[in-house]
Image (cartoon, rainbow, N blue to C red; front, side, top):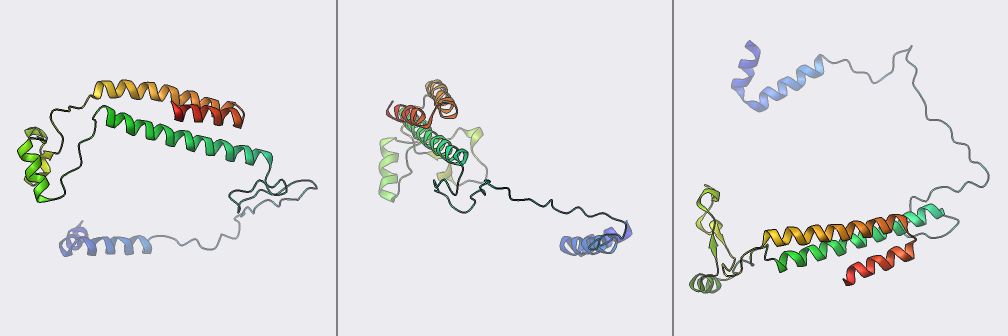
Length: 190
């Protein structure tokens, strides 16, 4: 304990340096296995006639000599899942706008600030939610109070969107790629 207080007084960096040196001194370095230790080796893989190697280095390879049918199907499935995710994300952004969930963009010039304040197109954070370290401008929400947010309507709409999205994901995972693509396109158009 005496050494700890001595190193602590010199500063935290000195303490951690002395601690790491102590660990190095008290640790056995095992770079070479003990003579009686059995080191497992990787099993040898025999190439059988007719086996095709996996394709790791091509992203869009649909060549039968390179990729298996499973890999092509996986790529189609991943593509459709990504596309459905982006469609859902875009729809959710539209819902945030529809239900006024996000504040307006902050004014960019001093003239815009004066205009917004004189027109009353701002709200203030509630006193108990104001950070103590913030400037006065950090307590202003640039939202028109005449257009309030509707979190209840937004949550209900998101639940419906999630149900629809789950149906699309089920279709992608179970159906053929052409049927899944049609479902994603219908989801996008709805």
